[in-house]
Length: 266
Length: 268
Image (tube, rainbow over all chains, first blue to last red):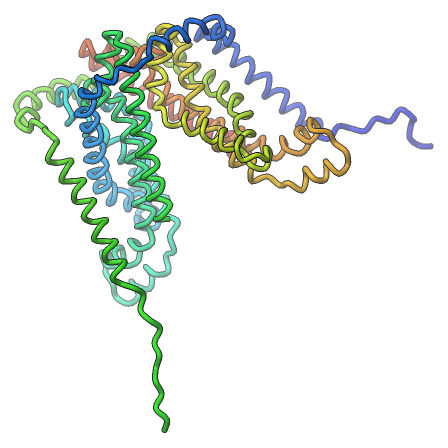
């Protein structure tokens, strides 16, 4: 026997993997403890405060249905803001997404500059955009529209430029070879390939805009968020719960419709 | 010579397509008509001297960030990142059981699958800011409310992505383990976990990126983090500070995106 009797097979995973996993778990949990202390949030607290939470949820019910009369105009304003902002953002993002796609924009510097600019725009939270535009243009729907346009352009251009970069370039070469100019190449070779995706992303951004326009109202940029802010400040919880239920329903319906449309498109 | 008759394939029914397109066009036109006829924007107010004055006054201030405020802003920014971290870690754990419930190859019962899907769908429909409002009302304006809002808001998306990953795993491995007599726990540890863990982690880190952005907004309703400073600075018309906050958010988000992108490339 060349093997000792007390042979134990090595673990299923090599030692290095085990070490990496252990170290990552330690780092993750230390960070968790640290952040728990920093944010004073311990899961135990949740159980202690449970009665409080349920008591408050009781206050939210029953919803005040007579409040609906006041909700409709603001709700429609929210939807209008989202529609206008999405439309304008789609129009603006077409040239920008062409400029940010490296197979259309062959100039390296222009391409990198555009990418950098859009990365910066996308890191700005929508609420800061709203705050700045409310400061510039005053309280109202217009500031919300402008903020949502900037917000939506950032996302749309990123998604669209990726689609444009992944298209089949042979048709555009063929059109160039048969003497098509730049515009003709874009219209006959690129547009048919990207149009379904483009519409699909526009609908997706519309969904995002509906959600975002709720937040914008909190700083006075129009829409149902303004109403929500007012009722919270008055501690009028039945009205708040009516708004929350309506918002929930609208988001579900719009997500459903746009999901169905997008399934049909792509 | 025999006369050959060419039988061309029938043209597809063009009329149906045409009618469909006309209806779509009509609906779109109606939606836009409804939108623009109801929108009341006071253009006179917007293109007035006041706006030009505002731009003249605010933009220069905005572009000179108040570097003197750096310590207090940095402190809140760190808190924001911690809120996002605690929230997304909690979500990454809560989402696992729900995802297993919703995955059709794990729980072979359509009713429970549908249940899981409905829970996740309902959570995703709630905008995070609304969750934050509810939690602030329930447990007071502190970072913990933000953590809870992030945790629950992220569970919806993570659970859905997790369920998709679980449904796409290789079931042969599990069959082999079953055939050699492994129990449920062993199947889970040796058959399922190694297949799903890298992608679970990758999505959890990706969600953390999103949560950093989200938690910087939650402070607006009092749920802790840098959002509170945004509200104060905005109410005091302190544009230098808003500029500084914006700068610190851009830098933090960019750094975190880079780090998480690096880790995710290593993982998958």
